[in-house]
Length: 82
Image 1: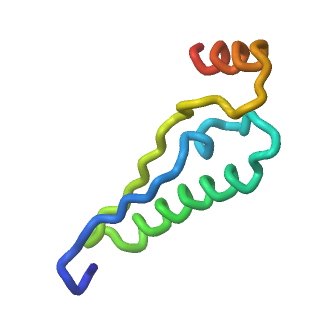
Image 2: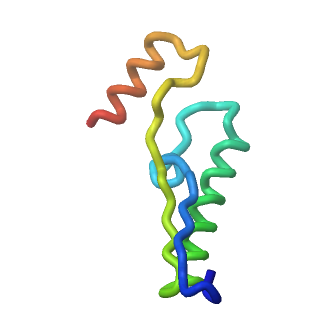
């Protein structure tokens, strides 16, 4: 990219690495991989600047994990809406 005069890298992460804490059990590989994408994005942005722009898209949850009770789902929505 540098030889070509620059470029852009866009990674796909998740809101979890900046949320402060995981909310669901059983998702350790997912949490760890998304935190790694965040760290990779930040590191590449530092290393490749100013020739290459590096960003991550980090959407929030769209669907709750399967198997939540209505009480758990309600708690999650209340915690995040405050």
